Length: 349
Ligand code: DAH
Picture 1 (cartoon, rainbow, N blue to C red):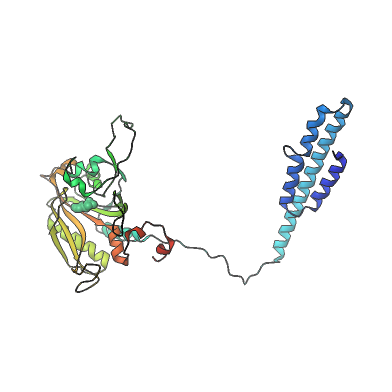
Picture 2 (spheres, rainbow, N blue to C red; picture 1 turned 90 degrees about the vertical axis):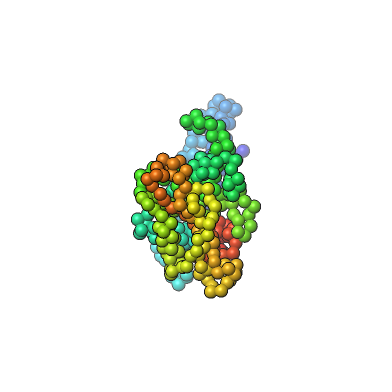
């Protein structure tokens, strides 16, 4: 083994000329850390003849202290030098372009959601939220879609695998789904709010779909619900025309067709006159009408499920497809782009 004094001299010299922090750390590892020179020296003591033990211990400590001091001194020197060079301005070129700050933007769905929230709150509507993981009761049964009813086939569901008992010891197996629409929040709102009230519910919904350009397992809707005294189809039409005017910035002709949704009676498909053409284009499939807004008068059974007396109160509801609306607005031909997270797509908005 090299004799300790030589080792120390060498280490101190290396510390004195160490070019950077990394070199200092290397010395620290080699001499002072576990398994390093000092530790080995100390470990060798029991194997030495008794008369050498004390001197070796002292030597180890001396190396440790001397080297620690040398490392600290060199570190301070290096820091001082770095600061001085920075202060001198050497190597700084004021004419080089700066680092560009990337700016984010709002997703087109967020944009349209916010616009619609502004529009509806300006008319005195509330904006509500509901759970994306929903009880079968709210997603289907309370909306007048009983178990085993064929209407369930309209919306294929993701069932959640929950432990069979929740905190309230209720058996939830097979009863928890990813919500297939924003309509369940209708009933949740009825339970919590006293009529009259008006609310919109923008949010994410999920379906067990084979995905293609017009089907996605996750997409966005905006539910609307207005409950009051003597609310009629006239109010529904008025609100829908205002909604379309807000979206397209001008009066849009509409038509109502009968539509079947178990939670409304009568139910309608509200079509808007194609805003992009006069006599047929690819967006409206040459029909000049765009199917946009399913809606209707809230079914008495749904009011009852929400604890509202259908003899006293009536209401209308609608379910706007936000994803579809964004596609129409921007001419996007594949719904899967919306949640792809692809920056080349997103940076266009
Ligand atoms: N929840 C329906 C769906 O996702 C859409 C809908 C239809 C909502 C009629 C409504 C309504 O509020 O009145 O297919």
